[in-house]
Image (cartoon, rainbow, N blue to C red):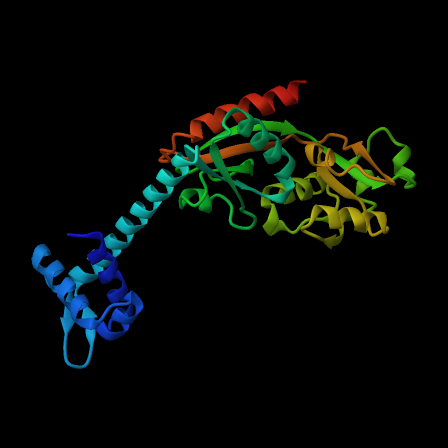
Length: 296
């Protein structure tokens, strides 16, 4: 059995027409027919139903086509790794993030890249899709807000932090050393949509409900920097995790601690079945770097 036979059969299984498949493969039809017959003879099964009017896959054909695609994908993957190794890249890792945790991810990736410059990092926004991307194997490790459904995953907390309130420097509350939930309940709030960060959304809304107060949501805006611009324009105040505030300091805006703030937890999550040899290196680096940063 040859790889080209697998590729030929995959195309034929998609086209279900010898002439069209041959055209896609830049072949004449007889060589394609011959290769498919040789493949069936070697397997000892019929992969196709052939009539004068149409071509269909047998049950064995459906099964074989699915397996053939995986084989070709693995071969392509192996070829890519070999090419990377030839260029001095000996590993790759797909890291998931959301914009709200971008600064934490940047810190972790920078530290890792200094230690393992021959590992290629690919960053993927996982907003609105969450840990399913990790379970599906499309992301090796993701930075997530706790708590999450950790079924089938290994979840390790790497950062604990509290919330702060962002407000214009001329706002009456800007003179306070800290701001209470009751004071915040009197102000319009610029919040992010729940779909973009369900954990953070529920934590903040829950702070008000626990005190029988209502949060007045002026606007729901996903982008952090747009929320800051709207704050400057007078639309309302913002509540951020302290690490987010680190990257948002700017003109005419001050940050004050939120009284009785709960602790927000940021974790890394990865599949228990992930066998990437670069994953343990990354998780160890992240834990050391972020824990050190938190205690400094």
